[in-house]
Length: 342
Image (cartoon, rainbow, N blue to C red; front, side, top):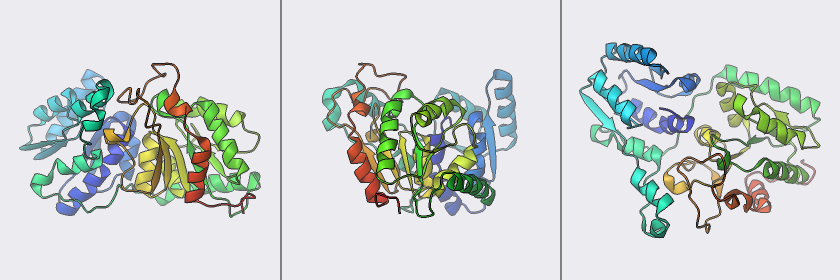
C-alpha cells in the first residue's frame, strides 16, 4: 500500500481477518516509506516493505514467494500489484474494486454529481472484498496499537512545554496538522495563523503543531506569525510519536490527510477541511467523532482526486471561504472552555 491513509484504513480489515482466522499467518506489504507504521498495525504477524529500484523489487518478490501465501488481498489493485500477485502464485487473490469511474465522473462531469451513487467508504470496501470467505463487519472503527514507550516520549515532551509555557493542567490539548500530501488539501498558512489566533483568544492556549520533515517549513512559518508559545514538533517526531501525540490530544484539526485517519483510529475527535476532494470519494473519517468543513455549493469541486500544488482557477475558494468562526464554534462543541482557559 502506498499512502498512510490507505494503510490506516486497512486496519478495520486486518482486525476482522484476525477475528475470523485466529491462527492464520497474516503479513502486510506496504511502500518502504511507511515501514515504521507496521508496528502500530493490529492483527499482523509479519510485515514487508516494497522498495524502489528493479533489483530491490526482484529481491522482495523472491522473499515473498518463499512465504508461500495461499491467499492474497490486493487493496491497491493497480498494474504493479497485479503483476506482483501473479508472481507470487497464491491459490486465491481477492481485490478491492476502487470506484475510479464514479470519482472521475464527479470531477469531470459536473452535471452528473446529484445523480451519482455514493460508493461505500473505502474502509468498508476493503472489508467487503473478502466477504466471500466469511470476514464480517463488527460495526466498529479503525485501530492502531500504541506502545507505552511512544506515549512516554510524548508525555515527557508535552510536560516540558507545559511548564515552559505556563499552562495550567486544565488547558485542553489541540493538535494542529496544517499540512497534507498536496498543498490544496489544507488551509493556506495565513488562514491557519488566523484560526490559531482565534482559538487562543477563546481560551484554547495549548496548541501543538505536528508534521514530518517535509512539513517543517510550513509549521515554522505558522509559529513565527504567532505572538504566543506553541509547541512545533514538525520534523522532530517519529511517525510512532505522532500517533501517540494525536491519541493524547483532546482534538485534532487537520485537512484531508493521513493524521485525519490516525485520529479516527486512536479515538481522538477531529475537525477536517475538505477542499479539492470530497467525502464522497470514500476517504472521510471512519466511524469516529468528527466535524467536516467544506464549501458544498462550489461548482468547481471536486477538481482533483488527490489534491494539487495550487488551485487550478487561482481563487482557492474551497478553503478560503471556510468560515473560521464556525470552526471555533465546532471546537467549542467538542471541548468547551471558558475565556481564560480554565
